Amino acid sequence: MEILLLAGGLGFFLFGMYTLENGLKVLCGGRMNLMIKAACKTKLRGVVIGCAVTTALQSSSSVTVMLVGLAEAGALEAQMTYGLIAGANIGTSSTAWIIALSGSEAFNITSLYPICILLGSLVIILIKNNKAKAIGTLLSGFSLLLAGMESMTAAVLPAVNGRVFEGFTNPAAGFAAGIIITAMIQSSSASVGILQAVAASGMISFELAVPIVMGQNIGTCITAIISSIGCSKNAKKIALIHLSFNVVGAVICGALYFVIRNIINLNIPADPVSVALIHTAFNTVSTVPALALHGNKQATAF
Image 1 (spheres, rainbow, N blue to C red):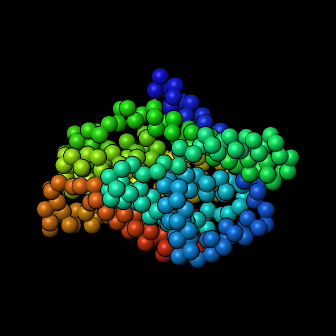
Image 2 (cartoon, rainbow, N blue to C red):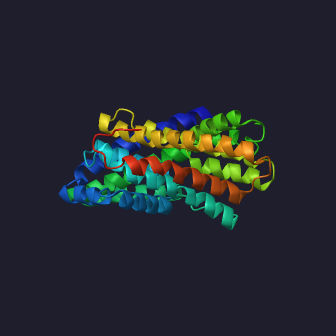
Image 3 (cartoon, rainbow, N blue to C red):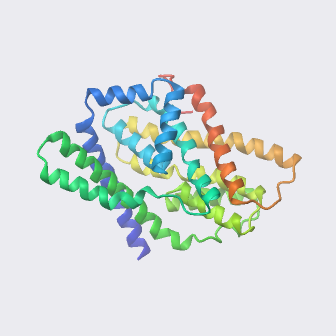
């Protein structure tokens, strides 16, 4: 049953991406192009907007997939997205802070997809204006995409319970687990939430939590990679940029981690707040090379 749910979720995701692109192609007139270019005009503006949108949606994957769709629709070049992706990486940390500070699960944007797909379908059926139909198509496509993500998560989540990170005793194993588990459940926010649940029980050390978080941020890139399947070279570059950010961040943070590990004893219990802090620190450090290279029209990736 889980395999069928996973396959169906992947089908929903890919068809949703295709539908989303079709809606965006109609909407990508001159005004929309100008708005996107304005958002990407400066490094800081891109970071702020990317952070704000991701905080609102509680999903960096959704933002990155939207960027892939816009690139496929011809609305922007991959080189314009450095700041937006960097901001999305920072914004996704808000979920961990909400969980850590409130002790409850954060609002999940996927809960809105049934309403969005209903609205989108009604707009397509009842309104004859082409622009309105394009908006309906966009809503429907985005809803199918979210439904696919939720189905894939539901298919693998039963096998990834709160004890999944407890069996790892060394940083390399924790790093690999972070990548694999996050890639399976299609959400770094969900994966970090699981880690916070383990940390709340006092079953994981600070020493192990750091490499797990680094792996989680690389594993979340699988969503953008899947969304770029069958897309143009320009759209694929956005998925590569997203992956590059987190790989570079892992290299930088990994080097700092091993230096600090040799100076300070990190074998102390972690808690949900410290996990949120690690997540935020990683994503912030990952933006440094992005800010350095963003705006270079010749750059394609790190």
